[in-house]
Image 1 (tube, rainbow, N blue to C red):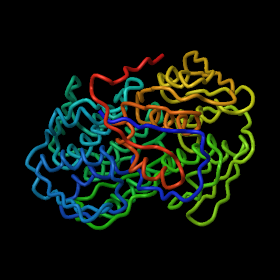
Image 2 (image 1 turned 90 degrees about the horizontal axis):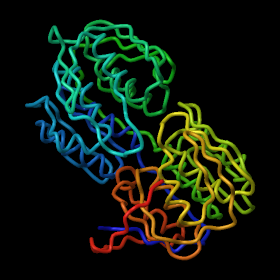
Image 3 (image 1 turned 90 degrees about the vertical axis):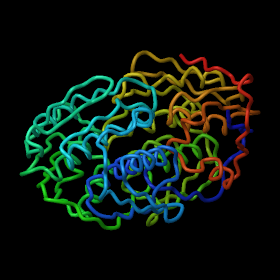
Length: 430
């Protein structure tokens, strides 16, 4: 079992280059199943979720050729199954995108319920609603079975009862090869939704309105292939910005889309972090004490739920008392018990955390409980005095490419060590 060993208390200085967006990649790669041809995808992040998706596609009959560290060629012309491996699919949260892609192209799909991070139930009722309105029969259980009644889906008007990123993307994938026009109202507007739409359009789809709350998809007969580059990762960039906020220092964050970062930058600036934007870079500097502020997570363009743990860590080192409200997930404060082991003063009541700033953290053995919480605990370890041992790092490797290497390049004292199973520290989450 690997752990991160972090010797904290050092400000960060230097440059970090952001990788391709994890949340876009885990939709775009399964969306390649819709393409009756060869697609080349560039700026692909090297993360375990992406590697897992490559394995799933290959098992289904796709040819996956890794061209270099960040480019891949996928050929889905000879898919031989619409039932991905149960064991592989259940290990990844984004496995539900296989439903929309396979159902859209082949008229049927059987996919295991998604796994991944464990911070609350993931209802897929809006996905199922969309598929049914487009003419599919759907049976729910440990496996989701969907089949188009006429062999091919039909366009429909679909209103999302709640703003759902996953459902918006899944229905969009299902609709690109459907007969007629599909309209998604109350659609999510996150950057990775726009990225998925741009990818599909580059392959021959006809999607308009992505990034607004109404998306229209006119079905086409086939997608024929092409080349596409994934956008930079908004959350990875935000994580390193939060790290500078917590530790102090100055880091130039490269390969970002500043417009995507505004919801994060504005909150950090309220806290006293200096941020300077230029083209595709952000210079992030913190030399004075952090100020308290209040944060509520909301769908884009609001503050992202995937940044809630990271900014909470920074606020736990700010002067005064902050309120953090989780407006998206029901159970995303599970990491707080681990943060308290470092000396944080945080009280959670349902979806609200009261964060009383402390002068410093002290290193301790802690455990990651999900992807973004794990990243947040890395930040906490970087800011803590002494040595922090962080376990369950497989969660972090699901979504961050070479986090250790990137942090070491800006002066962090962090390394990966192998710990025998009998020495593993069990989490005390609460």
